[in-house]
Image 1 (spheres, rainbow, N blue to C red):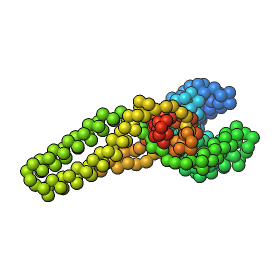
Image 2: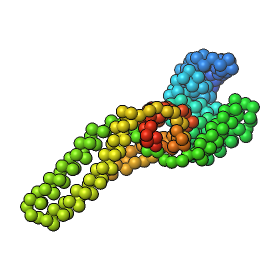
Image 3: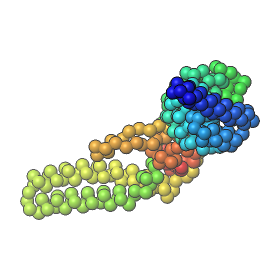
Image 4: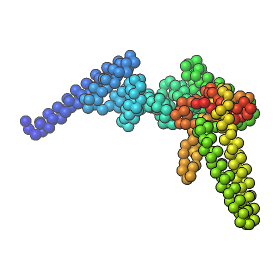
Length: 332
């Protein structure tokens, strides 16, 4: 063969191989589509993996496998494949929905909201489903009632008779109930976390040390005839005594709460994360607000694992003092 003929044969061979691989890929994808329509997630995963092993890296393949991983609760794998599909130019609106729902299952609601927004931008159908999951994320993130309400209203607007419409109505009813409860609130209670309940001994010891130290200096000043010093130390002691008594009363409340507290039920009305500055360092404080008893509202910091589990409107057990009902602690 001449050089030109060899080049032509080589190009023809490459084209033939490409066609073979393309036809093979289409065959795999046809099998995948069949399994997808039958909701057979395991078959989808197996077939797509075989396709990718041939070297045909298609965005469509990663889309289907992400769906399969989500269905089999392999959420991290679903996220990996979903992101690959998008990086390869996927415009399938189901892919960001799969990503969003996978992040929801992993309790990463902030990341989920962004992907759900992508599904909306790509006109996912049914759109109502996406707004339903966004409303859930807003609620679990402790967004304002107005933000959560707007998302539930958008969900309901897209259809009242569907499952998502029914859930949206329940969400709106829960917000309305919480708002009615807020109007009945009479006073703000004092809430103590389990950390405070465990610090009684340390608090008493600290107050006692302050008293002993300042009384010692006051007596020393008096014995040495340093009356001005005695007067100053006496004033400082008095101020510290006032502060100490305030601390003692708080510690006594905590002690009484742990020893004589009675149980009642309350409802979580808000959950949010606030930033707290401690010695030039910041930390996240996982906080809930709840109401109980005769319209008493209280706020308390809780541990993150507990924060991730509680939801708005949840009924919880509250420990309170019968003779001082505005002093309480949630039992979580």
